[in-house]
Image 1 (tube, rainbow, N blue to C red):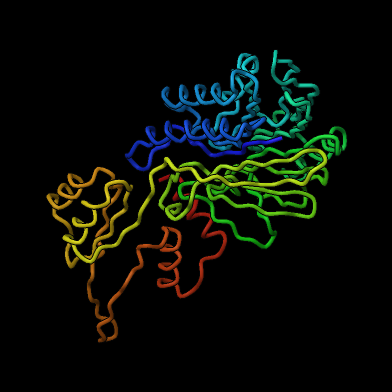
Image 2 (image 1 turned 30 degrees about the vertical axis):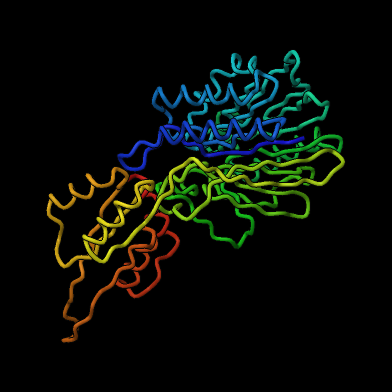
Length: 402
């Protein structure tokens, strides 16, 4: 069977004031075309379907229209879970109606999807808290443990409020129980979840700009809690495509299909197609998304250099840094925005000389770095030491509110 894995659509998201909706429409259509061209048997969407709990009407309409087309008239199951940007109840509320059209929603970790047989399509043959087994049109069995974004608040709705076990312990028990009961080698077994799961326990993961650090709202998980029966872990949350292979399974973040911050400027956006049967090894094929606008961070030595480049590069969304010995005049900014409609921000790089111990020392700041990297550089300069984990976490939380 072939399965398409995507995540982090963030429909309705803007880049500062700039709407990404027209790009999102093109990218959604491209994902539909890829699904049809490769004749995939199922589609998995691993959370952050919208950018916030109350998305604009146009984003909601685009979402449901896209899912309906992805189902191929109900013959192809589309399974979508809630991420930390999604309202669990909003995602789950249309489940009964959507189910009749081949769309399966899961907003909460213990959600039970009703059994169903779609004429000339697939069947839901087994269900449990956070689990479904699908019999596809080709007769193959697809088992999915579906776990939307989980934090203590969402868990407490479903378990004993006096139970203070960690999220990792809860998920390990929950996943292992389902895998032991339903997942054998007679079908393909998938874990679909939205979480921060480092591939290596010593790995430091950088989350997308403006993403609230997950340690403030949930827990960082470990690959060690994945049941050994699982063939593939379809992850959402991180916006960069990345994969890893363990002794038992393949783990992958498909990444977002659109670059949503300048920290993603160098990333090629992708979706993933996996191919697996009960008797064959899993293969993974990343497919590059072509329709999202490329983001550029550019530094110019002068105002005139900026004008020349912007005139010749209209297709990008741009963060401009311009070296100058003074601040911009209002007319300068208007001239640049008139030349290029995709300028997101214009930053002056003031080249000044400060007296330090009677020695002229030019202070250079590398504005090609991310905001977090610049903060770390400033902290080192100000306090002559590295910021600790607590300081960095506080910085991330403040940045996520901006």
